[in-house]
Image 1 (tube, helix red, strand yellow):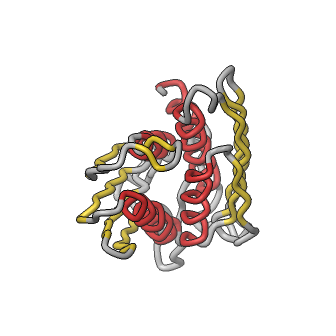
Image 2 (image 1 turned 180 degrees about the horizontal axis):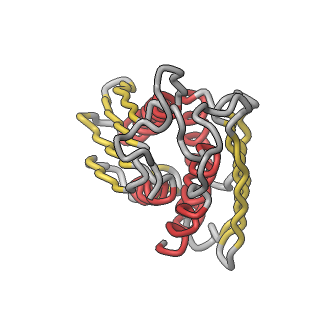
Image 3 (image 1 turned 90 degrees about the vertical axis):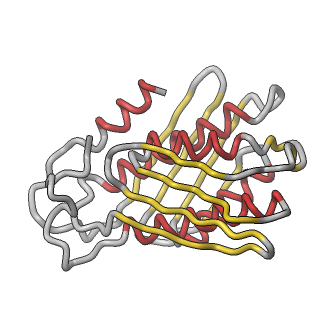
Amino acid sequence: MDTDYKAAKAVNGSEAVNDKASASPRKATVTRVTAETNIAVALNLDEQTGIDVSTGIGFFDHMLTLFAKHGRFGLTVKAHGDTYIDAHHTVEDVALALGQALTQALGDKRQIERYGDAWVPMDEALTQVVIDLSGRPYLVFKADLQTPLLGSFETELVEDFFQALAMNGLMNLHVRNEYGRNTHHIIESMFKALGRALRKSVTVNEAIEGINSTKRSLTV
C-alpha cells in the first residue's frame, strides 16, 4: 500500500499555472495490472458520461453503481481478478485505482469545496459519511456488520474498500453507521452517502480564491 500511496501523491504534485479551476471536465483513467488483478477505472467528476461497472462480484458492482449514480459521476470499472480465491484482491485494487483516478482528476484541487458530508437512510438503516480532501489520508470506519456474507461477498471487505479509497484518494474519510438491522441496507447507505459526500467535496466554487487551505496546498 505504501508504494501506491506514493504513486497517488505523485500524480497530485504539480503546480497550477493560474488561480482558476479548469473549465474542462476533470477526468482520469487508471489501469493497474498485477499477478492478482487487472483493473481499469475511468472517472469523470463533471459529466455524467454513463455508469458501466463489471468486476465479477455482483454485490460490489451494485454498490459502485450506487456510488456513481448518487455522486453524479461518470464511472467505468472493468476488473478481472482471482475471485476463485475470494473477492479481497479485486475489491481492494478497484478501490485503489478509483482513489488514484480521483486524485489525478482533481489535480491541484483549486477552488474545490474540499469538505463534504451526507446522511443517507436506507429503510431502517442510517449512515453518515464525511470527507475532507485534505491530502492527508485517514479512515475512521464505525459499523457493526452482523451478516458476514451477502451472496459470496464478504462484508468485512467493505472496510477494506474504504481504507484503500481513503489512502489513494488522499482524503480524510469518516464512515459511521448510526443504526440498522439489514446488512445489505447498511452497506448500501454507506455507498450512497459516499457518492453524495464526494459530490459536495469536489464541487468547484468560484468564490474560493485558489486552494481552499491556509497552507495554500491540498497535496501531501
